[in-house]
Image (tube, rainbow, N blue to C red; front, top):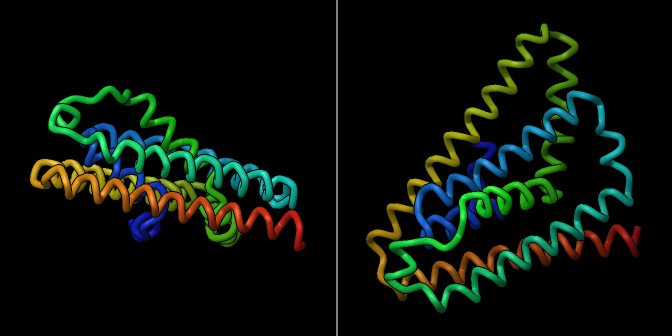
Length: 199
């Protein structure tokens, strides 16, 4: 669970979506994100680390992460002004859309990629040398379970908050969440520029 706890783009998006649309939408963002995480776990396991470490691929991922996060942040800010009781009761947003948002944000999040390739990759190499495959599956399963538990916690917290907070506070939270996502996006864009022009 501690791997998921630091507030990042996924947690910000979960809070925003949960406050606007409820538990299921926030949880589906988390499910989309963990699906991308599992893909990276499998890529590390299959030895695809070298491909993802290529400078061109890294720059592409930083840039795509920049676009996804800035777009999501701007949408959050734009929609903050239209939060109303009607919107809080019902949602025009689909669960599929929430899942895809979480999936794309995690899939093209270079910090997530660096985590899986760096930390998980080194743990995998160490465990693979000293323990049987069953032990490796237990460790990987524990990571996935911890992330799932954190996602349920975030989704529950955001959907509980939406019941007690007034419209003005909800708008402020949406603005802050949007600004947070844009901030992460700008950081990703800066990293892409550094990789492309100053490396």
